[in-house]
Length: 180
Image (cartoon, rainbow, N blue to C red):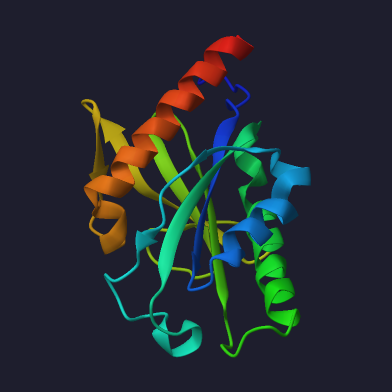
């Protein structure tokens, strides 16, 4: 029989997709209370692998990743997704934007072994958490590098994204070691 253990806290990350520079600052301010300060911030990457979001978000989109200082419980991922959905609605409600969705927030976490994303869409490779939220292992870390699965989004296969995820993983490992 396996021994039941508490899972290790993980590094909360967030992908911010928008065409508006102020979207990132607004998001950081909104999440400061819950996630704490932003520990790591990626460059703003051009988001051009797919036209999936263009109809509701417009063109010229960028994606920027934020990693938060405060480690979270893995079981908090569903709460993060529910919260970020509310934040998207709040950003739209400011009335400053013409698009039906000026901000897209995709929360997840990084552990030593994987990058997990939360979503509201069910698929064969996703596990239901609660409250209409699912999780998927988007990348796994093996032999000192990130590896994609057959369902991994094309942009998450990018080496520049994965370089940032490796920085996040190292930051997480140092934080974990300090907590021990």
